[in-house]
Length: 402
Image 1: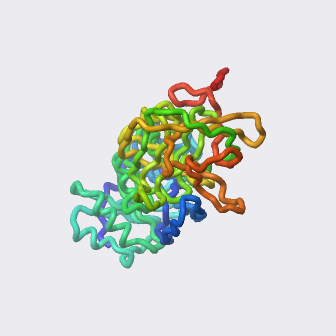
Image 2: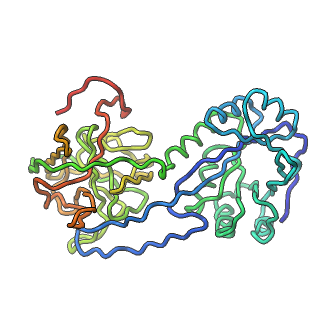
Image 3: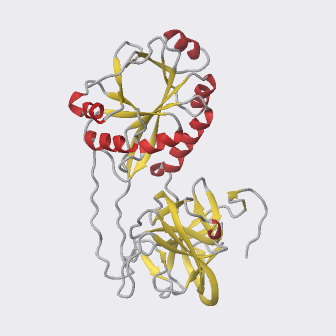
């Protein structure tokens, strides 16, 4: 493998940390999912759980404040260009120092743990191949302006290999590009920055995408009222992602109880499947977005992130591609949790393609119940949470909603 040189004896430092990032499939495991038979709207959803994928991030910095920001977030392995600097920084924080020597990276026992390679042409990219790898970790510094396509080529070339491949990123946005290349992404990034803002943004990115540890608790609620109420302005949310049977958005008239509204991924005799769409409800309704927040449906815009949830509470983020607001006939649905203490409500368009998600553990095997077939006594899934909100953020205050 062609290895570039870097300035030895540099005062540069790398802050190394690991974070978990959920992805639909790992580099080592291809997950093939066959489309389930769509005989009716009442059907079972896939129970396959997402696979957890570990990502490695090294932060390259000369800024002590950036180092402190990493330590405060639990990241404690650092790489230094000089042992003097490593000892200096070790005096202010409990860290695990590693060291750069030219194009190579060593641990405290002088064992080589990584090599650094510059890639600025297709020929240099070809030299970075699994058969040429002699160390556990490979750090690639993409030069010449091209990043996405070379990163995708590396992901394809190294799939199934044990080596860890990282790319040098000069900001959190570039890091995200490398982490998502060909959906799986590289194994990690080297974040070469001197601003704490990039540390914060990348950590926030991992927090928002760390779906494996963020399963949302859902509970059953019993439908107590179904009433056609007249016309209203309802919102269709079209995503830049496909949804599977059993997935939808959390929507509700009250933030204290959000209904799981199914996507239009199911085919019928009268209309084609639209697996990117959720006919979510009227403009006033709340919808769950990342960060434990809610947004009004009327506030959604192209490019905004939203949370897609399945009937088991597993969630993932998706990007809003388009929002359509149109006047349509509405139906009011009210439901009570099984304790009988709280009542939740939601307005939905009165159409066969609009459905609420129910638990699939019962004998009926139903997953989605169309609002046109919904009756008193049916059980649907809701998410219970705090009701008081300020700009979508949950707060502690007295509130009455009815």
